[in-house]
Image (tube, rainbow over all chains, first blue to last red; front, side, top):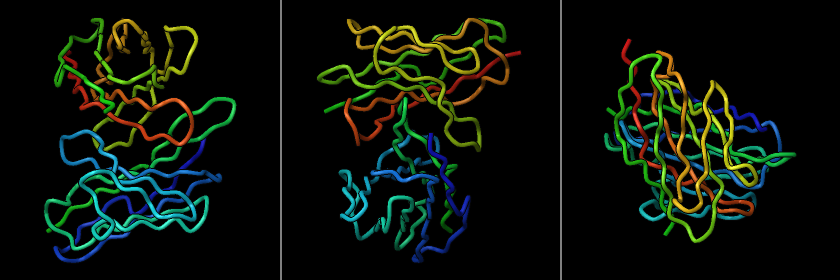
Length: 115
Length: 114
């Protein structure tokens, strides 16, 4: 399975600023996924990021608010822009891996608090 | 649209008692099925998964799950719960084939009474 390094692990940001989250994977993967987990809630998919193409956003999420980069097959960033307290959540990246088996691996998450 | 339902938001069991967490899905075909656990302040850990074959799958930490096609269910079980099992449990599904997103249920918060 793939191993993901996600950073920062947590941050406290002022409203109106932006936070960029990075995910580095130890192997090449076609698709990376970005999730949001609001306090006490389940995980909601923000977008799917393919290398070399624009990310595909889920309903309710827009590129201006959550721009994503995917410059190569092992790296992706998610930026949360124009922060408001409602953006306080855990953000996780995930990849699908395939080998003799398959599955999904998650980063350790970024806990964002907006003040 | 695909959906995953975990009917129980909170469950409390006594240590040593058996556990069953319910998961139902709504898909056009049998999806890939997963159970994850999230301890407070921790990341997601995969407990087990089902793709095909034997409908009873064994996972880590003594958990197992049974896929029942007729009921569109994938319930998680453990014969004897330990206090360290207290956590949030998520059922998740993905369409078969590659490159498909995971859709999560709302989660079940497990509390273990000593």
